[in-house]
Every structure is written in structure tokens, then in C-alpha cells.
Image (cartoon, rainbow, N blue to C red; front, side, top):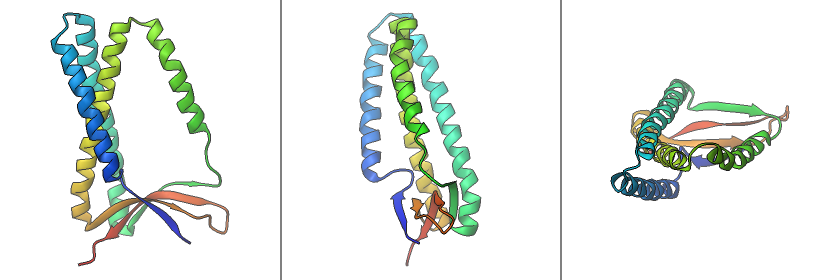
Length: 169
């Protein structure tokens, strides 16, 4: 049975894209924060940024810590076992993307802009923090972490998860 391996949590190119995007959004946010006197924008940004950062950071750290036990014992952690691909994630993403503009109409655009910029900055910094945490954990495990997607087994299931590929000295 062969497996497709992808770097966990993402490749170096993905790191650079997230880093550039987070820096650009943060610079734009700081420019707007320090050059505006609209208190609604400032409050919505200062509320959304730390809450988003804490939520995503705690979620990713707890998931990674849960994986560490299985990774240190077995060298792999199964995330899911499925018979077919799930299209519901695509439809859920499409639903969220189409509902977002209507939410902006329902609330004041300045407040919505603060929430959106705060969310994007918080999520970007959380992703970068998680990447640094995973790289520090890799040295403890003695290898690199990779996502894997396996071929279907005899029962028709395929597995996705994370595995450790040990360093060769």
C-alpha cells in the first residue's frame, strides 16, 4: 500500500505565503488603526484579533498534543478513515463564502471591516505560531512530520493522518 506524503502543517512555500499575507494584513490594519478616530473599528479589531488568535492557537496546540502520544508510540496518527471523499466540506465552504457578504450588510461596514481584519490577523499569527510549535516538536520526535493519504485497503477504506519520518544520521 503506497501513501501520498505532504509536509505537516504545510510546506515552506505555504509558510512564505502565510508570512507575506499576515504581514500585509497586519500593516494595513495598523495603518487603519493609527490613522482613524472611528472607535467602532478600533474596538471591533481589538476584540476580534486576540479572540481569533487564542481560539485557533489553542485548537491547533491541543490537536498537536493529542497527536504526539500516538506519534511517539506508533510513528503515525490516523485523522480519518473513509470509504469515499466528503463533498460536504466544499459545500460548507461555499455556504460560508456566500453568506459573508450578507452578514456585512446586516452590521455596520466599519465594524465588519474591523472584525474581518482582526480575524485575518489573528488567524495568520496563529498559523505561524503553530508552524513554529510543530518544528520544535519535530526535534523532540527525531524526525519530520508529514500528512499522509493512503490507498484503499481491502475493505475499501482509505486513511488520512500524520506520520513521523525519522532522520537518518
